[in-house]
Amino acid sequence: MSTTELSAATFEQTVDSNDIVLIDWWAPWCGPCRVFAPVFEKASEKYTDIVFAKINTDEQQDLAQAFNIRSIPTLFIFREKVLLFAQAGSLPASALDQVIEKVRSLDMDEVRAKIAEEEAKRTAGGGEAGGGEASGGEASEGA
Image (cartoon, rainbow, N blue to C red; front, side):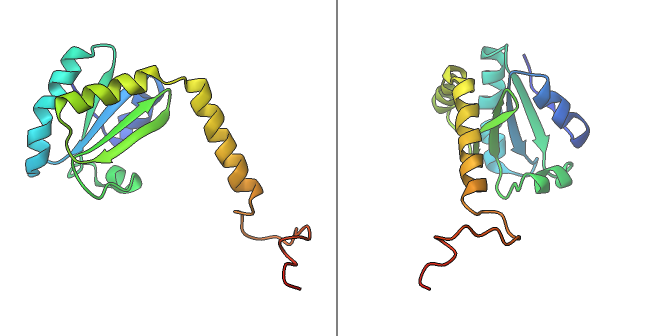
């Protein structure tokens, strides 16, 4: 399978409708992006069951800004709509293979449970601003 170009119009549908999606954030003027491109392309031919997509940050500036892309190339890997990997810099082929295999081997039910647990901790831990529902202990410490 070859790589496909993503845009703001196709991003969400691509991530939502495919099991695993690798995204290479790049630009034509970027030397390291040109070095990583053949590695990414070869992987797309090897892993034909995975979607390999590229996003040109020059053409998709709003999308790059929405995902806080500050350095290119940056690689994202989504599995079942969950962003599991986000790393700037190019990877050698062997490292890309290792990351792909690790993503494939994950128990996504376990991943989702951990995400839910972290969100519950953040919510229960007073991470929310506002409202006056202090329950003693922490609020009155030192009084």
